[in-house]
Image (tube, rainbow, N blue to C red; front, side, top):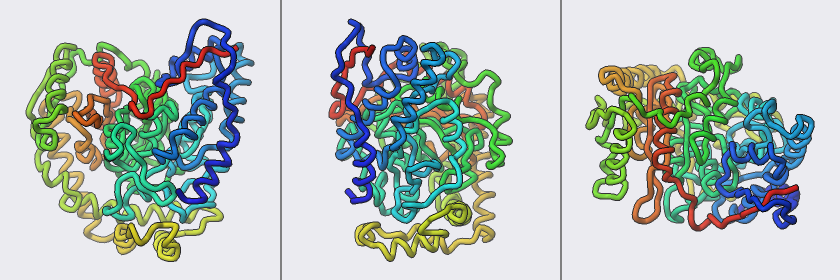
Length: 525
């Protein structure tokens, strides 16, 4: 592991105060392992333990597991101070969290592309941005801090969202190396938000934030047996986040339960004048938030469209395919109407980024928006995409240039946002979505499209539709798979009802065996 990464992690972890061997004062026990936000808040309210002790637990997990999983780039040296402040405010409020909010004192891990105006780096996994300072917290981080959350650290990611090169393994970045799937060592963690998903799956944090352009939340959540929620583009602000494509980028939660994801979602949605897309997105936000849609009977009277082709092709004859059919029975038993074997028009073109226009638009928007973002940094070693490319060339050992090239970055540098090819690509993506996914949803009067695995993320990415994936099982080798629920823009309420009801009816998720050693910590005085 690179020296700077190790130094940063060692410095931060030096703050650990392991309090797990304190004398018990109650016969009751609280299990930090697999703890949910609601169970943590209940224990807080009962004065069973403190936010500081919770942060201690997660920091200890990071120290123990991260050398193997390589999913956390940095821990926040101010995390314990933030936890102490949360404890102080709770004490002033009389021990209850009713007026403090559901995320008060809860540690949250951020993907390394989400800007924080503090002692941590925001680097997209690259050494090129080490030392650069952002002008302010990203809007979503500001909202988390306002909610009382503790910013625990930064999660590893696919470097530059895998734009650097399609030949680089998913979940690899120069700063951390290759992150590993906690369920199957040789399994693909998938997606650029891999570190955020791995850390949650391995109980190194309760919840995390990821970003998605095309599959970057949905795929790692699917492959690491956690819940991933990509909201409608514009529902959450992208301001202060290293950009890829304004047309497709979205910020969303990764968690072990649907309920936890919604607690985070409620905290981070909202209008931000720095992100024009949120002006339209804010219209979708219900007055009383999204937690009201956590209904066990949420499948009742929902119309679900099942798309098998081509998403089941890679699962033919597998445990996953059999499980999927069993889950359809669960939907039906819980009151849903199943519309099976639906087809998406031009699905082959939609799934091919070169034919759909997605690749051309993404590269052009990446260059254009990244240059704007880099120009707003201070103390940055690089101020443009061209300088990022030069940095990699001039620092081949740091950036592992002999093993991994940067043909994607070079291709992006050669684009122009005003090129006719780019303009045509945008029109093509819109047309494909209108004649494909939107037509499927509207003609069949669906509340959600349902698919096995994560490949349908691309269908939902082209025009910024929401998607929610929930753990659905494990194959014969122990590799997780999920079910993806997708909807039209602004349909988060329906997706939450459906996903939560399915989760409560099945309760399939289990922790990874290799990293599931329990800490049954008795309540603290």
